Image (tube, rainbow, N blue to C red):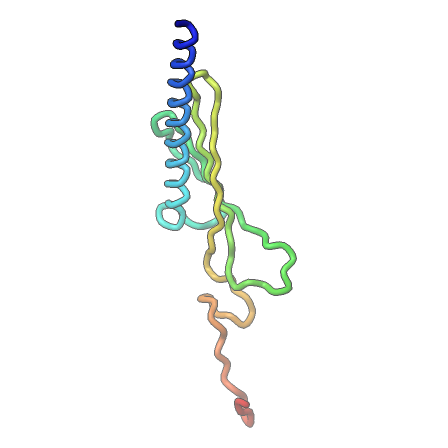
Length: 129
């Protein structure tokens, strides 16, 4: 009988932990979805009031693309959403989700602010070949 009680107890705690992870993942994904809508896509750190015992923090940082032979005409950002909570046993738990987001086009030479190629008029005596 004691073994059955232990099995049921373990199953209940595992179910509660699974439920908490699911709620945390849903909250983390919701914060990622807010970027560009309620949260501006710009470098910074954001947090909010705890929701049902779950606190969240969102970090937006420039994404470095490494050594590329060309410079892309857009800015990229690494967006990380971290949700933490106290589990029933008093243990601090957390989940982290990250994604890359494409921002506004960079102001590169030869491009307009919209990322389109600049249209230059041909000088006198020049023709398009």
